[in-house]
Length: 168
Image (cartoon, rainbow, N blue to C red; front, side, top):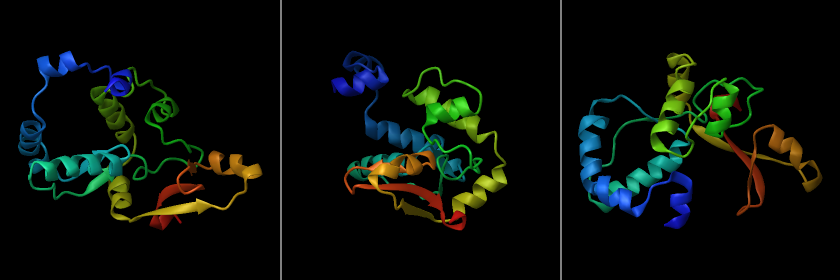
């Protein structure tokens, strides 16, 4: 769709020229990478996991039986670092994501940020359940929630953020 092209720059012509069918990609990716890894890491992993699992189910392929790590919540960011947008996190870590919203650039940005934190701490955090907390603020005080890293959930009309259970 045109709105996707605006975000990622991928045209229909490029897909026809360089793309492969999704089921072939998923089978190849699973064999080449997933089968030999201990964890799957993504930025905002619930989004990626939902997308990937729906595609695996659509093609009647086995779901990946690996634990997921999420660079939004599984890295021990300093309390002063409230953003979780990947491009902003790159800047907070003193580098730029040169081509945001492209798979390769976002993956390299995620990897670079991840590499700045102790692996043992990220693994420990990944094993703690995620919980969603709500900020109890009225309209006049919404900036307090925003500054503390809460996001406005328009559908539920509340300020929320996901944290690790042991951080509560």
